[in-house]
Image (cartoon, rainbow, N blue to C red):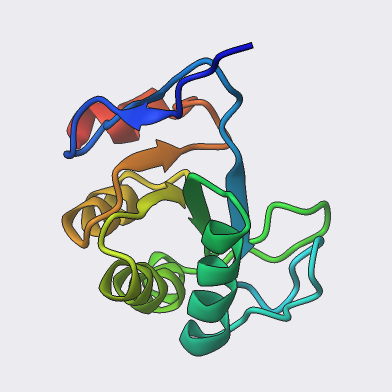
Length: 137
């Protein structure tokens, strides 16, 4: 079987990765109560190091989330979410300018700010369910 590597079709917001193979997405939760890593990557430095490791291990995109969606988790303010994710997104893109970064948020204001910081994809757990907030954006 002769497979081509996955390639980016554009370099801006909404860039697509296409190719015959599945695309691995590294999930990077920068919360103190992450269900998957127990808060191990809470903070910019450990999070960026983990993102680089995931990219080295074959991830094609890093999905950064700053608010836990696990059952029973406490919501955080939009300001706290940004305080958690912006330094991580900036750090990833400083270390790996070619990286594709996704923001995991349900807030249009967070998405807009993080896209301005260099993320290219929005991962909204509500599937844009709160359409009014997105229309205003």
